[in-house]
Length: 341
Image 1: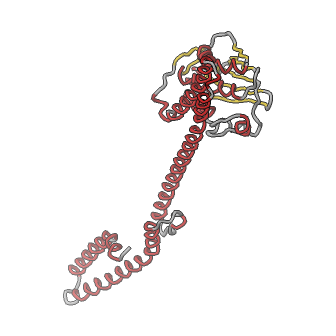
Image 2: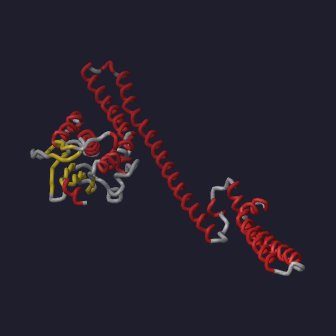
Image 3: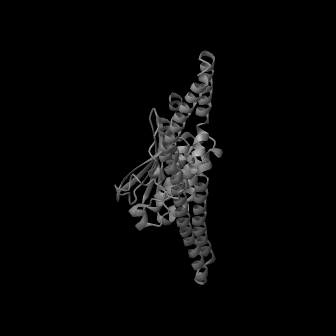
């Protein structure tokens, strides 16, 4: 900060000073001895001007201790800006510095959030590419070894691989649309039993090939939700159950309710979840020790299910005991509870 710039900032002080000195000089001229008044006015003006200039000069060097480091911070490329900020000399400077620190911290926090989301998105894309390459590679192997297979068997195997690719693509599409979810859903009364039947039909071949027994209560159930998005949520849970349930296992679906909510319970007798992993299964990209060793996984299915359930006004919780069972519960708050909030 140059001295000229500081004087420019003090222009109101100097304007006030000139008004005061003009007023004082006029009073002295009108009320004093005209033989000595000229020298007195000159003496007063010179003295006051000297003290005002001295005050301004001292103020400039004092303020320079604040503005010079601040200028260096502005021109610096250093990342630790907050540590380089000078100490405030006045309450006004303190307020501005506090405001700057708050804005900078919010900006840094938002930037870190965007960076984390970009990194997680990139990790998901890389993982997804590796996943979708598996059925593609399997299809090529089928073509190379198709001489010893019947047409029906070959078509059946191709259908399995195409279904895997279709599921991966559907998962990626829902993942990409999760931020624009509010533009593409409509809450109405949906028939849960029919949605579950559609999901089971979708994975019918996997149920049959692994010999998984399926049970569902016959009682008709209706909830307030969006059929398409709820269907995707149930698809992810059932697909997860099928993946981690051994051959000849069991998947059972039952309904429960109380005065506050309805509950859809999807339970399997698969390999279960370790206690240290139970609180992290809904994190994006988390596969756990079982997911890494037992089967290939992007760690995105349950994350998507949880996020979409929240956006629909539902919730998902999970209970499990390793090597015994896993129970996934979708909670549907009853409409009157919304009105009481």
